[in-house]
Image 1 (spheres, rainbow, N blue to C red):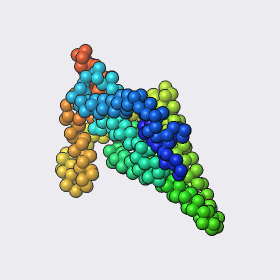
Image 2 (image 1 turned 90 degrees about the vertical axis):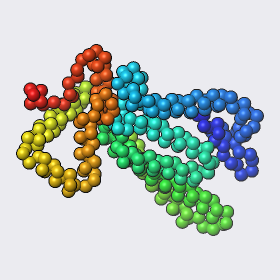
Image 3 (image 1 turned 135 degrees about the vertical axis):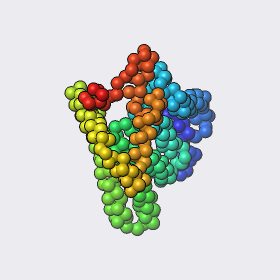
Image 4 (image 1 turned 90 degrees about the horizontal axis):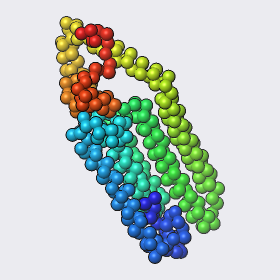
Length: 310
């Protein structure tokens, strides 16, 4: 809403007007009368809140076991893996840059190219970092972004074909072929938008399913079961006499990707539990911080009967 104040569109035979309010001439007295309100909105909402989020992400590692801070910023930190606790700022930056599309240019094709570039950069980083705690959300984020890129590309061609149709009509030539091409791209855009809405619908269904108590309990039971099996497998592997020789062989023969995974695992096992380097999720670390305040030792969330007995 604040940036809409700066979004002006060119007119063929008149001065530029606001994109959302065609009756207001840009930088006229009527337009400038809203400048104080827009300045406050820009400083407070666009710049102020954005810088506040950046600052909170900057100091978050030093306040990782501060219960008050973590609860205050839980909405920003809880969705991401601890290694990329700052990803909320990445999402905010993406949204801010997309909102600037109307300010960058009044030409739809330039806006589409700009938005496509922003989305491609961010979803590429998302695919690389896998920032969401829930793997399903990583898949959705990347898939929906790819569909948006396709919409932007097809929309770019559709807008260009509209300009070609107008030009051919002015030249008095047959526009049937151009109109047929435009219709094809219109159908493709409709299909892509339908796919995007379907993806969003699937996300809503998934979220609602997570709210059902029975489903939550089922997922928790599956989580505990998977953790238990993994711990038992690790215990059995460590007990084998040839564990270290085989581990050394794997380290020397495997790819850099596999070695990075092993290094990440070992680093997190021996990392300080009071830091994000331990890999514990937001909910678990907050519970640990609360327990530390009350002098209570929290047990590990995934243990087997053998581990408890030991």
